[in-house]
Image 1 (cartoon, helix red, strand yellow):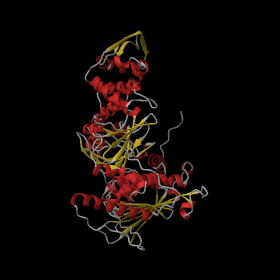
Image 2: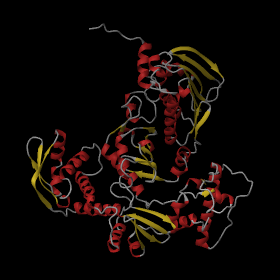
Image 3: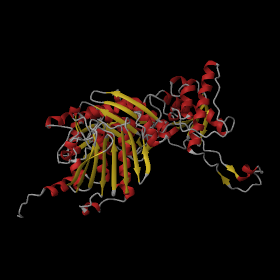
Image 4: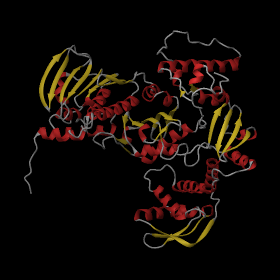
Length: 628
């Protein structure tokens, strides 16, 4: 056996630094979180070369007292906790006491800091873990960290860094999340002398979302306010139309700390399951708060993961918070026709018949112009609505020629676009039982879509998606009411299961038997299936059972086992729905539409596809230039 050596402190610090400092973004995270804990209201992060060459973090927090500066750079020194008992009630972002020592071990650090009660500040320099100088200087209140040459003394680590653009993007993502979790702080991010992010620190989360994601997202989000058994959930979730092919739109925070959690992701995505297509992920920015004793934040070196004391209840609270918010409004997508195109002849006044077929689009207005035009259009619409109700017409503001657009835009630009509000403000909802007796059936399009007129909108219904939804809800109701029959099958199906699958089936066997399955043990890990629920006789029984076992293997689930099985059966039964390109007569269509309108959530089929889309009369008339 090789001789055992006791490592020196510098080597120990470099090894420990590897757990904390993975890349420049790791340094920014630790320093910005310290600034937040210090009560900063403005935080500026400046980097060059993706943070590889230099990082500067400036805050206006409480600063570090001169006598504490050296101690701050020792391993396991912290102002956040004093003993092990404090670990159960952590309310700060940092607490391990490893950040500054780890950063100093692999870079050149220059610290300028001043507390509010001192007339002077302090300048401290430490390189590679070795102190260089400590002196008094004039400085503003707060702290400034300047980090130079990351991994200069550990070249093996430095060569694993990515390109400056990639490293800068990691820092940008980090500051985006910190801005969302702390809207009361003004964040500024400067990359190679260019401002990439700047929030106001107004405390309005919607304002931060607008700055980070733009008007389209900010105009299609809903406020979440929910108090559950374990959690308080606030923030915003997006309309189902705002989604991505990955989870980059999902942001959730516990105690102000951004975390990654399969549990919370699953709760959010399950709440959206009836509203979005498979493999599409929603926009969510949720702030979760709970008793600190119910969450363990000390389970990961980078504090990106947490452990909850009651995972089932946390799942239920998050699920209900999102699900209840989504149920409030109608989810019929509003269709907008594309912008009109003009031929060269139209632009010059020539006859279209004799013109060359060159097509050009009008150049879009600048952002300032779009914002101002949107504001004026919104104001006109609101005044018109006021006039309709009160017969009083206040003057409508018009834009004067030659007046430059103003950046001082009212809050109205962050509300829903006109086309989405029109349906909710001036019309009754199409999805209600009384609409069944008043809508006008126009006809079938492409033997797949139904055209319906109701009040001031045209509705287009996908017959396959609509029938799937009706069958799903009908089957689910039958299963929950235990209104079923058992259909015997011959020869029986034999399931050869893994040990885990066999255990799951055995644990939930009563639930399967209660809904019409006939299943019995047939060897150590095998089961014989002699009967299935009658409405599933025509579908693949073996695949269905294996799918349900896969679902039951999920670690977190809000629903009871019986409820989960019911929903899976109902989903499989949708295979009997009518398909596209199948002709139905008007009587059949009306019966199906009437059933659809009676459902609580008819907007999407069980697989997330929309069943109905709409276009308002106003939008159609605008495209035909009847109104402007």
